[in-house]
Structure formats: C-alpha cells, structure tokens
Length: 401
Image (cartoon, rainbow, N blue to C red; front, top):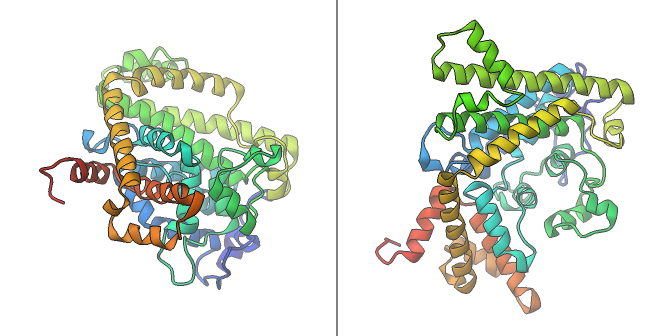
C-alpha cells in the first residue's frame, strides 16, 4: 500500500516502486516502506556507509573537522537530488538511495588512494570505485542471513552502476570489469542503456555538490580568495550582487551566501533544461528515458561551459595546490606500501581476511589475481585513519601490533 500511495504522485516517466523489477533474491515486501525506501535504509545502516565519515573528499580527515568527507558529501548529494526530484515529480526515494550509495566503493584518501590502488592492482585487473561499489552492495556487506550484500532492487543497482551514463563497452563488445561482468550473468542491469531519470539526477547532484562544496572548502582553507573566485563567469555576478545589497557583509557570510546562490543557480538551470528535453522527447515512462538515446537530465550548454571554467579553476588552485599535493603524495605511498607488503606476506592480514583467502580456493594461474582482489577489498574498505594506523603497525618497529 505504501508504494501505491507514493507512486500516485509521480510523473509518468518516473520510476515506480510498485513496478520495480525486483531483487536478485526474492523477499516479501514491507507493509510500511516502499522497495526504494528499504534500499535507502539498508544503505544508511551498512558498514561501508559509516566508514565514509573518515574517508577523504579532498582534505585528509585530520586536516580539520570543518572540511567535507565522503559521508558529508554523500548526504549533501542526496539532499540536492531529493529537491530536484520533487520539482520534476520523480521518485526521490530512488534518487536518494543512488546518491547515498554512489561513493561507497572509494578507497581511503580520495582520488589519490584510488589511483594508487589502481596502479598497484594493474597486473590483476586494476581497481575502480564503481566496480568496488557493486562488490560492496552485492558481496562484501555480510550482514543478512539469506544473502551476501544488501540485495537492493534492480533500479537502485542500475542507478548506482550507470549513474554517469551507459557502460558503453557492453555495446561495443569490450570487456567490463570482472565484478560487473559476472553480475550481469545473474542480474541483467542493461548496462548499455541510459539509466533512469532519478539516477541521472543523482549524477548531476553529485556534480553540483562537488563543485560548490570544494569551492567552499578551498575558500575557508585559504587556498584562494573570494576576490579571485569573483573573476569566474559563474560566480562573479553572484558576488557582485551580494556586495551591492550587503556592502558590509563579513567574509564567512559572504562565502556562505555565494555558495548557496550558486547551488540555486545550477539547480534552476538543470530544471529548465531538463523540462525542455522532456517536452522534446515526450517521455511517457521510465523506459522511454532509458531508450532516449541521450541524457535527459542535463545542464544547458551555457552552464556546462561556465561549470568547466569553475572546474579548471579548482583543478589548478585546489586539487593541484602544493599543500594538497603533499598529502596525496603521502597517501599514495601508504596505499602502495600496504598492498605490496600484504601481497608478499598475506599472513599479515587480519584473521578474518585470511579466512576469505582460504574460502576463495586460491590455486593455479589465478592465485595472484584472487589474492590481489581480496587485498584490494581490504585496503579499499579502510578509512583514512585506519590506513595510516595499519601502515604504522606494519612498518614502524616501535608501533604496538
């Protein structure tokens, strides 16, 4: 009954919980929550989600309590996604589930950690946070009596795996990452089609949150000034209008007012462009969105251009700042050291993880690949501070084991 009540208020092209394609392992439906609400709740209660509190967004967690982590970023993405979905009459529960899950597969230390782990694992198939997210959602969360993973609905898994668009290698006949390819044999997520409108909303909500909150963190960290940011075409008019209306506004309030107006400008542009595209394609169902042949939820061309200028500024002045470079350099060394030592000396793994090695029946030509995958799972699941602590335990002779 819960699903029908929620679904009755949605647009024709929205995903409906009552029409979900189901779960890999069949379960009785909840009388009080829709299928997508249950997905959201399972993600929120997962161990992987809690770990996001101490995983880097840009600054390593100990740099300051104010700066974003993967957890705060995911919550902010979910809030923006829900707001957009309500305006478009899409299923905000599904978008929230996708938004909350989209970063679960990230290694410690942000992109630096992922790059280092991918490089270390390159002889064994590499590492990608998108594939790792699927591993977490379908294998590594070992909490339920009847299945591994969270047993999420088809729509949530589709949205997480394809939130940045179709996985075109399927269409082109290329090889997908092993976990994604293997899961396809059990639960066909139609990797070569566009995802639902809700998943597309979650993807752009991620971009909006990323741009604005990194800008906010960079300003408050003193990596650049509000005067420098005001030279950007997307930000300048907002700062000028604020200074005209509030000439004595102190810097912290000016930063906050700038960021919130910038988020509003990007969301408003997205809504206008998306409504235009919906009118053009005449979508009458969620499958029409998937078969549209192009993205439906989108920014205007002008916004894409202006966002590109903002991202270039952040790349140069924030992500490549020498203070950030120093931290990411250390982070890469920590990840490489951990992977190398554990590959050479698997008995140094905790007892539980040695058990996973034994369960995998390692042998023959695949020994190195299977070992690397399990060690990759172990390292990817670490928080920043746990990775630093584990590195100290393994490499510092004075550290307590």
